[in-house]
Image (cartoon, rainbow, N blue to C red):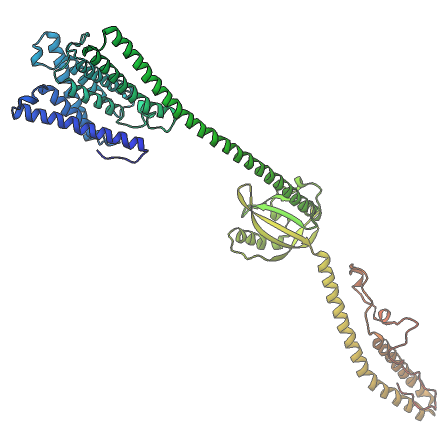
Length: 537
């Protein structure tokens, strides 16, 4: 028999079953070998059939010590139990037939073996296991009856089972032990369940049952011994025995009551402590709940009142919008969240950026994309385009991964950047114009001076005067253009973010200084009168 792990009570019961199995088999083997094989007459008080049945019962109980007996072992146990039942049944049949009592097993002993056989057959068979335990308990009480009748000097039982066996003390003790062992062969199952439990009922069973059985037998034996010794008569013996039993049971009940009181006091103390701990935990949970509710309210208020758009979409390839805050609704041109919820995220992405956004969503959900900003062109509800800066992170939404996107409208910023780039281009043009005016002005002065000199020398030829005047007017026009170019030293200050009106820039108007300001470049000299020296430009 192998001991299995369990509670101390379970291990104690398993040890008891192993010890009883070994003792029963040993007694049967010693009687069979010593009395009948070696012809030892002092062991012949037990019949061979009785010894064989004890050997079979002990061996079967030992084999049933395994919690899950193999099929072959189970077959051996069933065969041994069947043989024992057959021997007991034959003995009862011979008793009914009137055979010689000295040559056969006592009827009470045969009845006990028959009950033990059925109890062995019921082990590990759920349908009949409770009945087998009841039969094992009956065997134990019949064993107590044998010991009591023998101890009190009675040799005949006033029942149909007849006489007391000659070896009543040994046979009765083995029946008591086997009855207890078969009842407890599976600790925790059936009637034995209460004995192994650390409860008030288990404590009463463990202390009350042995005390009641042993105390009753002891009180009866002492009463009978005093009566036989002539210390008192039969009536006094009955009275003393009754009072002694009453005292014994009262003491046992008081002992159990004290134990139960201590157990209940400990339980009440533990329950009181648990109530205090539970109250403290409830207070903490309530405080944490309020704190969580406040935090959630603040977070929700921050989300709803945030000027930054916040959107949650779920899914990898066909990502669907699950949440959007009021700022996001306004940016996309909606008034209610229901207008966006449930729609594919890519519906709001401009066609040129959908492939990129789809790839980034997939990479983000696989944690293959480092955190960062992306600038993407999106669509409003009316179909108009605008640009956003977006940052995304993976969150849990209703038990599944989702993507939280925070974004801001950067359309105005992009327009400002475009205007700044255009202004920088115009400043470059201005610098180029100033440099070009300086480079053109010097040769133009030489040309103008030479034309005036030529006009002075050709003063006597009026037919050429108109050509000279036409050339001087051309030089004057070029000089005026250079004068305007050199006055373009700054651009008009941009006071509006709308650059739609700046597609054509009037350099003359933007370069004209206020009336209080002086000019930054000299004007071209007027043409010289005939006969005057040329004026420098």
